[in-house]
Structures are given as C-alpha cells and as structure tokens.
Length: 404
Image (cartoon, rainbow, N blue to C red; front, top):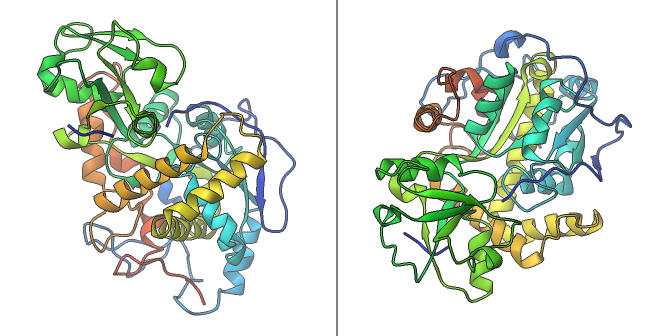
C-alpha cells in the first residue's frame, strides 16, 4: 500500500509536423479495414534481437538505417510516399505516456528528420479504435494492452500494438485514510465509488484477495472527475484513480489517503500503448518503423528531462484552448509519475516500449478471469504484437538507432 488519466473524447486542434498535411478529418464510418496479416510486408532479416533473444526482422527492407550514417534517400522517398500519418492521442495533449513522447518527438523535429509527415490530433482512447481500424488514422494511443485486445476482439479489427511503454497497470485504488482499511481483505462489505466501472486491474487485484465485485463489496457511480469531491463522499470507502493523476491532486490539497497499487500485488497490467493497423504497416513498413524510431527517441528524451517534456505538453494544451481544464502542476506530476514507472519497469538493456509478450498474455489471462472478454476466448497476445517494428529501431544495448 502506498500514498500516491482519465480518458475523454476530444477531436479538435491539430499539430502538423513536416511539409504537408491532409485536410480530411477522419471519420468512423469509412470502409472496413482490409484483411491482411501483420507480416505480409515480408520484411528483410536483421541482426537486431527481441527481448527474448530471438532474431527480429526489420521492417526497413533493403534500405536500412545505420547509426551515425546519412539517412537513405530511397528510404526517405518511401517514407514520403506514406503521405500524412495521423496520430490520435488518448487524452487531449496531456503529458502522459504514448502522448508526451509523440509531442516531444515532433517538437524536436525527429519526424521531419526521417522524412515523415505526422499530423497529431487530440483524441480519446476509446474513440480512436474505429478510426485506426478503418485506416483513417494510422497510429493512436491506447489505455492498456487489454483495452486494445478487447476492442480488437469485439470488432474483429486488425490492430497491431507497436509499443507498450508501461509494464504495469496505471490504475490504483485510493482509500480514505480514516476508513480503517489496512488490507485488501478489509474492503469486504464496503462500497467503492467508480466513475464508469471498476478498472480491470483493480477488480483483478481485489479478486485475488478473495473479493468478488458486487458480492463481497459494492460499487456505486460517482459524478465528475474531481478526487477532492470523491474523497468527501460519505458512503464510499474510496475510489479507483490513476497513479499519475488523482494522488497528485490529493497531495497538493493536503488530503491524506492510502493507495493500493496492483503492482504491489503482482497483478499484471500495462499503459502507454501505441498501436496501428495491419493495412498501414504492410503497405508502408519503413514509415511505420521510422515513426516508432522517432517516437521512441522522443520517449527517451522525455524520460531524461520529464519537466521539460511536460512543458511541451502544457504549451500545446494551452494553445488548444485547454478543453479538459488541465493544470500545469497536474501535468508535471502526471509525466514524472509515468516516466518513473516506465523507467522502473523496463529491464536493463531493453529499449523503452518493447512489448513483453509473456507479461501481456498474463495480463489478458488475469483480466479474462473477471470477464472483460465476455463469452469470447482469451485473446492471444502474440497475435496483436508488432515487435519486429520496434525491435528494429534498437541496437543490442537498447539504444535507438539514429542516422547521423
């Protein structure tokens, strides 16, 4: 137990990187995605290895990127042929994983350096899925790997996860400090407030403590998103919140609380997901790989200087009219928390964002126990992973291979 983002739909302002941008707004009712396998691009073999040590193919074909060497004109032309790559964030321009790294990469000019035209739009995690499925946008931020898998299963969509930045659930359970709750088992017979529904990681954590939702404890809906309001609601003992959001707001207000973190109870989870669709990846493998190359360099920069990265997000939030009423202190806290979790859960020598297939399958298996896939079979994590794409951007030491 410790003291310690909330996803809302917005499609408004656009951040454009590189020479040109499409004027077409993505629509959810476009043609259905093309059935294609993730490996249909027939990438060339590479000596880059994945986390488990096996050889990983490079999506770059015969025009590889070599550290310190000039960027190939042929590869540049291939990237330009991809046209505008639209990226949909998960929550406005918040300083969160799978958002701030894209913003930092754009601000540093990394996409331009690799001949990519990237159009960044503020979006909402659950609203992004049909746009990616239809290839009306090419990459997006997802809330968790299980969230992507759930939408893929329900809609038979060909999503490809290209990065998993956080190797733990971002959710937590915030409990009033005067509640008398000292262990998960003490929550038996209590009532917990939820915004929409109980996050899977928190529900799984309670289930492992022998507590079944609506049997051993009750949930009630709470209005709004203000943790200062929620913690004052008398009938509830606590409520779920993001480790990178609500705890910071409570701390800044001087309100004491206790926090139960799924990470401390060995409940698998993930956050900061970047995903695409098989159609785009198969048609434009170099652009897909180099988009991730620039993004992961942006992530490394953002982790190295979290306050500066948060400021990039804050400036964009303000220039976009701040429709979610985000506060600078909150965004600084958000990214410092996310960055620390990413760094702490990424093994030494492994590049940021490289998916761990076994851990992600464990996540799906754990959440299947609480029924998030309904009557459908538990998805196969490997079928959703595009590890060859992100593995191809790192050297053997886990450093981004960048041209000079």
